[in-house]
Structures are given as structure tokens and as C-alpha cells.
Image (cartoon, rainbow, N blue to C red; front, side, top):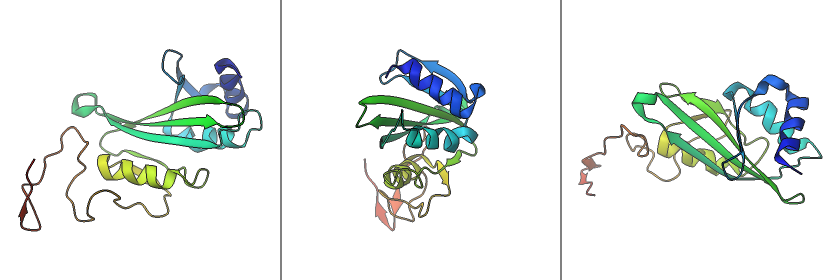
Length: 161
């Protein structure tokens, strides 16, 4: 299946307006959608028999910094039986980065979303157990945010870098 075929199936099942941008130079090729369309597009990627993206291999969060005032969540999908891949991106406002959880579609999203929440503070609405996974529950801040200020002390112990 070619990238254009994937785009056409998404447009047929979710509407022409759902795809905001296409990047054929990225690897895998990428589409950008609005965050509010994420679940609709994800369900199509998973359930459409022609696409059958049965594997959500990675979720990456990006902080574009206070100047851009945006954050991004990037999803990498792969279809094991059809051997095609797709990258999907949503852009979120930095003040309130919230996007729907994909756990109901791909169980592997559970830990990927928790990691992204822990390190960047992006909230995944509807996640069944969104809590820190790498840092202690009482850790202050999210270390991969560009404006993160590390703690000098944690529970009375000097934090050294």
C-alpha cells in the first residue's frame, strides 16, 4: 500500500478536512491532524481492514518551547501483516496540553502515555491510570519541558547533576 492510499482511506472514513498537513519527507511519512480528531482517525487506522495498523510502536512528546507556545504528540504506527508504517502528529497549546488517550484502542499506549505525561506534563484524557512512571509521585515538574527548573533538593537529599 502506498502513502497516498493511506491518505485516501483516512479521508474517506474521517472526512477531507481531518488531515491538516502531509509530510512525505519524514520517515515514516507523516500526517498532522487536529487533536479533537485523534480518536476518530485512530479508530480508522486500527479497524479499517485495508489499513490494520495493529501496532502503536511509539509515542513521542515534544516541547517546542515558550516562544512557539506549542507542544506535540507524535504517534508511530505499523501494520505487521501489511508492512506499512505511518507517523501521526497533533499539535497542542503549551498552557494546557491535553489530548485523548489511545489506551482503549492500543493497550501499549498505557505506558507510552504515562511516560510522556511524566516527562512533559502532557495529559491524556481518559487514560485509566495516568500517573508518573519514571519519577517519584511527588517529583516537581516535568524534566523534558524546555522551561524545567530542576529541584536542588528532593526529600532533603541534594539533587546533583
